[in-house]
Length: 336
Ligand code: NAP
Image (cartoon, rainbow, N blue to C red; front, top):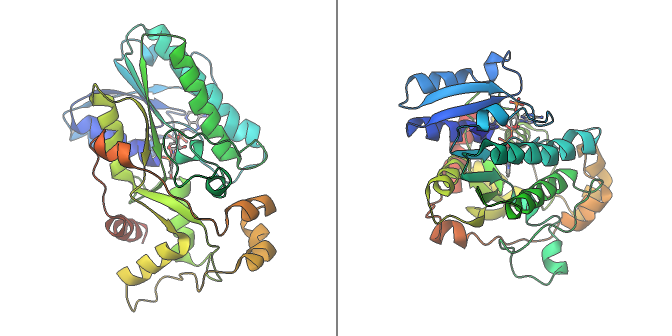
């Protein structure tokens, strides 16, 4: 059973599972929105696997029960990933935490589920970039949990750390299923569906489309290819020895470094309105509000370096990473 399979990451996970011949139960919030899963029905028609959609909402208690019953494993990805919201508790935190609880309750009641792979995020590993310096760390590893986010400050990150903690708590309370957690950094790569609404897509559209033309802050993120994220989920699902958390990041770079990568990939082309410069922090304090950046966010993130340790994903999960140059090239071309 896969939740969130209609999304950006989820579509690739569904594709991998169908390609490997699995019988896949796919959760849909609204089955009438056929455009959301048309691409998956088409993939299923040309794959050895089979697709069985079912209706479920993260906030509806018991709505995953029927699909979980008889399933061997669950990949739980569904969670709101949005940086634009009015009420963070209702729009982000409740669906993430209650949704995780509902899905894991369904796993427990199923009597058949043996493994749950949860899509968390590096946002559950750390909150602000300054956390690394404040905690005296040389890098973030799977041993770290985000302690600086809250419902008011970085609520998306807070939704991810609270949901992941809930999942670990529920795992400890039973012994029927085992939990493995994937913590991807910022996911990039071509979307499988033109209807994808993930912030990953919006971010790159803004970067090449001129929204950030006047300048970008010095902000660093980890980056990873969407297809590698899907492969990591499959490895976590299929490997008997998978356990704990796996940070996924091909590299850490700043938005400006990403901008330079795109400029180098398309030399001499002026079709993209790439940012003109990396703006000094005082400028970001002045204009950041226009882009939804709060004063505390700018203060605690702009100008601070981070380092993410991806060794568990390489050595224990056996993942190999796609170079970000390839990922970005294919994503830019898909968006164009
Ligand atoms: P996405 O394209 O927006 O997909 C989100 C998925 O969650 C969609 O399938 C959506 O269903 C489903 N969903 C949201 N709210 C729901 C609800 N109330 N009930 C049922 N389903 C609901 O986002 P994404 O980028 O693929 O992210 C997928 C997962 O990866 C999320 O858990 C996110 O936190 C995590 N993640 C993403 C990134 C990234 O950079 N993209 C990085 C780290 C972790 P609908 O199709 O019905 O909207």
